[in-house]
Image 1 (cartoon, chains in turn purple, brown):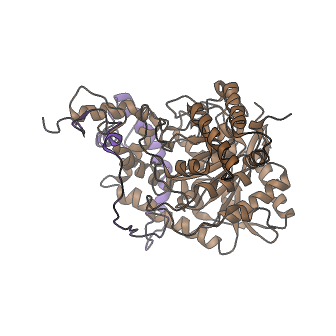
Image 2 (cartoon, chains in turn cyan, green):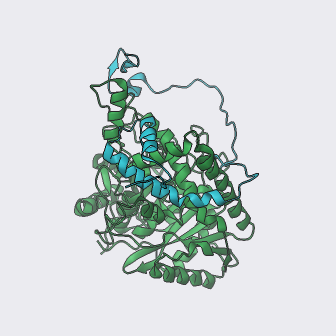
Image 3 (cartoon, one colour):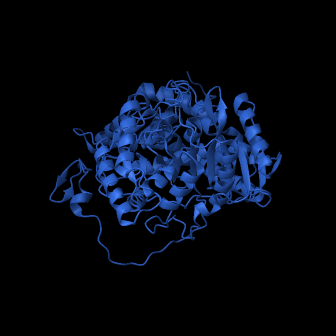
Length: 100
Length: 485
């Protein structure tokens, strides 16, 4: 199903799947190995483009350091901000323990 | 006797101002049409009939009081990634299946301020990732021209609703073609504004350096009117361009003789449909008959790299933007295990296949050892694509191309081949990568299905695009052709 010639290995897919916390099944990892390899193969022509002395574009607009005045204004009410939280306690979002 | 739902927005405005009918009557006509065809189209994720009726009554009061605007009383479909206070907003995802936003997006605020009417939240590919609206957790939207075919995507619900008469006009969003491609496939008009033209405040994020909200309508005048209505500067979006906005409708009806049009040969590839090529060739002759100078001796060699650049940059930005869906603050939240287990379960259950695929692609392109090879390289080639467009616009007023290489394809046809699906966007990606405005408008049929003509302009040149589009539309008599549903 996949081999060393592929641009991305099954182990790499497994690794980035863990980084992205996607809970991928074995079948999904197999499928994504083939699909991502296929997609990345089509991108190989990019490597041949001469980009020496070319600045990267992070953003199409020439805006930089947009500042606003530090003025006092009403913000979202606490109850509204919490209205979609899965678990609320004492006006705060209740989270799972990070350290067991 | 035509029905009220068949009118364009400006025709409806004329009727409302002349008191030929009320906004309530116009809205009821649209809601009746939705009742009649929605089970065949599935344009909406959430219908908002009661919101629409209340807003229609308010609109009638504004006409009586003399405070109506050009959008007052016009029934809209609103793409479901535009957050609407108190109205569920899903972005087409299970992740946000119960999400009821506590605030309004800037664009919906603008629609409300203008007195528009919201008919419902339109279906879309999950988080705007897709070109067919098949990647929605709320079912496929069908093309009103042939319900066995896709409407395009990701704003497929918005475009299908306009074409089917399930609204008069719509808002969509465009990251790599998500307004223009479905507009082309559904035979309606769609505009992707210059990046920074329309506020992204309250737009559920996909690719932040690419996302733009824009109008979908039945003719060019409607699209111009909607852009005027939603396009004001917004300090809550730091990428909102503070430059003044000229009134778009002032450009309509102006002579287009002498306009210089470039037709880049890279947009006429081997794989494109003969029928599309024929319609585009005819369209170029129509533009010449209007006095435009059409130059087909133009090459933009960077065009071929736009697909790779886009599908590295957009997924990279998406992988970062979608990290917020962790089941902690809002959205789907799987419970019962440890923090890390719950986070993985939430994302496994909440995201569909295409969203997972793009997150994976993005995380890979950004990861140590591959960042320079993929993400940084893509950003540099993005610069080259932008420079190539800039150079072309020193010689041409606009560029004209097909919007898509083919007409609407059958449902399921490309679902198992992600790269074949990505190729649908091949003509809409380059201008998106460069942040340029681009319009798609109908230019006839091929095999009974709509073909879209794309007009690309320089930064801030929406007025010129709409001026030429309006003249073309009039010459071809293509405005407001509803789908035969």
